[in-house]
Image (tube, rainbow, N blue to C red; front, top):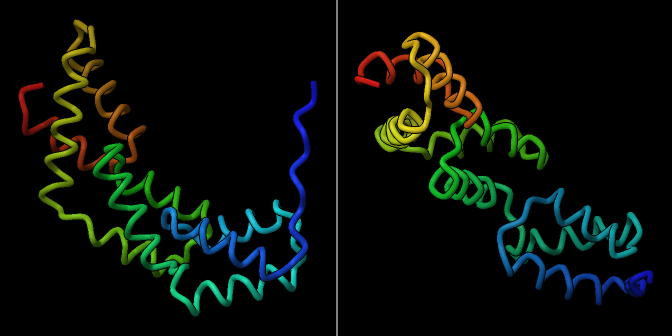
Length: 160
């Protein structure tokens, strides 16, 4: 059986109220809100008016979103700068704000996280050949969004 279709929102004030609630729940990028407004059935002029109002009333702030996204992905998921940067680009955050948000990551914390991830992974890699094991660990760090050079440096300085 098909799920019942949700009623579309055609009233701009109703759309604004719903968008305010949507933005108050968690930080959102402008693109996420714009996509959601279109999904709700609003038209271009209404969408842009609502986005403008949300920015004026500080429900929507790209810089705040970029910092929250960066902190969350780094602290909770253990992502590196490369992967975080790609995620922010997908959300259409400006390069200036991406750079600013990435600078908020403490270098010592970044290196500690990378070291911890590699040590944890080293325990699970069953590779007798030391060179292949190092390669696999470096690839793992790269897949988590960490810079290849930093991973190589951590691997060289540790006894993994």
